[in-house]
Image (cartoon, rainbow, N blue to C red; front, side, top):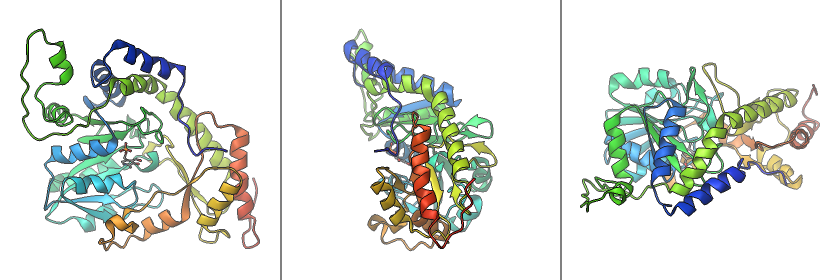
Length: 382
Ligand SMILES: Cc1ncc(COP(=O)(O)O)c(C=O)c1O
């Protein structure tokens, strides 16, 4: 079976996790702090706050901006459902906007019609690792005091205008789920240039306590902690952070490898007329967290049938990015999002993992090319 993704983990991660266990401190502690500092340095963001998932990171980001009931937050429907759910978790209303076909990301043109007097934030997703145009979105939102939160769940290692994706955002949220390049099993990170926001995020992730459990433990004298506001348990463990530190060192190599594999896919698939694939935007570079292809309208095999052909060939693929407004959880939403609907119904994600071989890529491509060769379609094989 060719998997759709396999995390690039080895002995180094196993040893780092074992060291954390042997140290006797496995909850959030010194390794989490070290991982935060290393991540902030790698992204080029002044502060990084580790949390239990990107969903938790988005939740805290919305609280940090002061969003709650009565507020509207513009989000893409074309995203993993956690993006919209985080808005619901704080009692606000997600408002779905359409995306650009090539990048699968929100643009000022798709967001602008949805801005109202209640709009307090836009969650700009770097979908599948393709960086969204943050500067353009801020040019629209900043004058209206609408905060742009970057959902960089998929984008660790992507580049936006010469800087790492996420570096320029007031708040950026990352995921370390194993479908992402850098993984800690589960886990997330928030980055921000604002020190006071970082301090509040640290408290909020740990029950609103004014001193962390690790600092209390280190103190020679008894310390009575206080709870300054209602917080959460969104902590990362030191075992996860130990793995994350190793993974972070490997991130540049992961990105380089995925970009090389993606380029090979693009060349191998270039003979299929009008087949669109994930690609760099004009202003940046994707880490190819997911390599998606969008089937042309004239493709002789429907997307779901193509997925069945892949399964028969022992190859694991995924449907393209989901659309939250089409799910029962958001059934009350009346959104008309033609680009989102085309992308979610006609795209799929092909396998891409660090140690993928040429022969495995050839097997994947042969399923697409033989489907494309069915009578109704003309194909020029390169
Ligand atoms: C765009 C986006 N946002 C948020 C998330 C949620 O991340 P996590 O699983 O770390 O909570 C994901 C996960 O796939 C995602 O793709």
